[in-house]
Amino acid sequence: MGLEFLARIRRSSILLGIPGAIAIATYAGVTAGVGLAAGIVWSLVNLKLLERLVVALTAPDRRSIVALKRAGLAMAGMTALFAAGGALLFLLPPLWLSVGFLAPFAVMVLKAASLLLLQSHAWKWMLARPWRAALVIVSLLVAAWWVIPSWLDLPAANPAATDSASHAVESHVASDSHPTSGGHGKSSGPAKFPNLITYLSVFFPDAPWVQFLHHWEIQVFALLFAAIICLIAWLATRKATMVPGRLQNVVEMLVSTLYDFIVGILGEKHGRRFVPFLGSLFLYIWVMNLAGLVPGMESPTSSLNTTFALGITVFLYSQWVGIRSLGVIGYFDHLMGSPRDPMSWGLVPLMLPIHILGELAKPISLSCRLFGNIFGEDMLLVAFASLGVTSIAFLNLPIGLPLQVPFMFLALLTSTIQALVFTVLSTIYLLLMLPHDEHHGEHAHEGQAHPAHAH
Image (cartoon, rainbow, N blue to C red):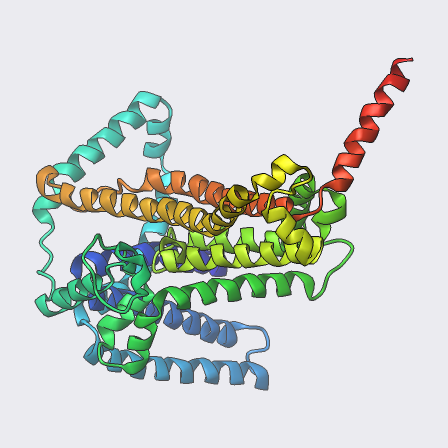
């Protein structure tokens, strides 16, 4: 159990510390949440340095120069860490720093106690009958329901911190209420979950760089996710091998699936050259849709600015493909409805405006559909999260109910579907701009081949 036990302590502390810090930041103020997180990080780093010191002093080569250097570095790191801890005491709430510092030790005690419990006769007796285990669980739930709220007496959150956080959240009222504003002014409407830029605006309210990030918040997150996709693609392809690793295998499977899907719509001849554009479009929209489910992140597609930019991109690209594939004359012939007889030429004054309006409506329909669905998902999650928080008062609970969790799983599905719908419609718009004479010839040839088979 030695070093492996300490590694499990670190993993458990991190897994419990992340949601714990987010919850404390939500209910007790942002500074309290940051203090808890800083205390946990401080304690884990201290435990790691202590582990290195013990290993260096107890190793078989403990008298060697290398071991002495490791011990010296560990002690120097611990000294610097204690100095940093003293500075944090003046910057963050000491109470939550202490709680965070003690959290890994509490995890260590609980893990040790759980190991003893799992090997005890009482545990084996309880698991011998299912009704015994159920009775114990019900008893613990009843005790937690009635006893813990009466014991839990946390100090009230710092009013200044609460007001700052509330002001930051209010300033984070999404520009999607008036999506074309671009974030230049505040508007009334439902607020979203605070993100990393919102927290930065609480700590550095007057910093010009924070104001810049807050002003261009949607664009910052959109560029961030684009950079993440490029980084993953580079990591997966920089050392490509015949026997792929996990990352290369996942990326190749995703690219192969998108290739088969797009080529199945456009055909082998035209589909291959559009796979990079349409595949990148799907991945980019998919990642942006799912980003809103990650704490501290923001879905850029919940803003009409982003979705309309994507729609304009598809519109301009499809028009360029039409002009390049059909030629300028063939492009206008397509807009006129390809008239070939006097009747169709007489309908040109009617068909040309209809086709132009139809082309102009494509980016609007694409952007509004994607924006409405993703923005609606975010508001649904906010509404049920707020309802879960209000359950503290009328159910006498120590913490709120996570009512938004079931809808987060639903959002995983709908976000994927919306990215797929956007990509499919973009693929069809490109298909309509490609020449169709060859397809008609193929169908005619197939129609002539059937009688021969009949004979």
